[in-house]
Length: 319
Image: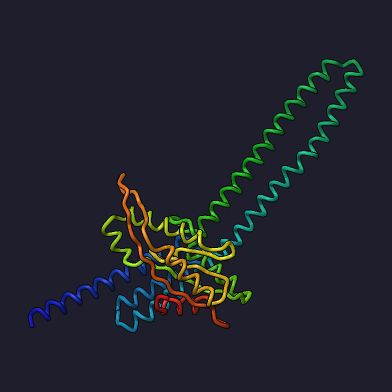
């Protein structure tokens, strides 16, 4: 009897700890949503804080289940608004860079004509015998020419630098920083683009079995390197028109443009290819780590949106 009470007490403490962690996570998510894009995130952050406060007051099982759906809806809406805002600002920056580049290009021929006119004046002065005045004017023109070239070179350099930084920024917003494959934000974009044109496709989900045990045994550095290698192997197995992203911690998702039969065959092949030995260096020592993959897949059904498709995928059993 005493043992049962002790076990029940332990379960209660675990439940309270889990709820507290969830509430803290909600507050952190709200803060990040508001901080990343204040223009569109503040409203969603307030809703998440209200959700957190409501759960803090009364955190029953139905309320927690409902909060999961609310959280997903708010983050999905925020993601879409943030992407639209980013795209509009990126387009504005691109247009500004194009204008700067056009300005630099237009200045060059115009200034060349002006310099030709000034040099013609120098020639007339020399013909009139005013050598000193012509020499001084020619020296001034040459100095202006060098200054002009320096200004144009500087302008071109700044435009190139801004374009490179913009490309890097775009890459960072669409890729997972650890593995280099797409991230959840880019997944939303890829799915929405295919759903919009009603394109037929399947979604494959690959998960490393007992990956947490690998992290515990070999350390997070080893785990990170394994994730990079898995992502690289997976990327080499898909076509250019398909898409791969890091879905969660040790889960990778693939959008494959084919029918369900072909996707099922490829899913099994890829899962076998991803399973097996990996070699990782940890603190100068090379380790062999054997990984096993589980996989799920489904095709997009008629009139099904991206959220419904992904929700159904997570409820399937490994194929």
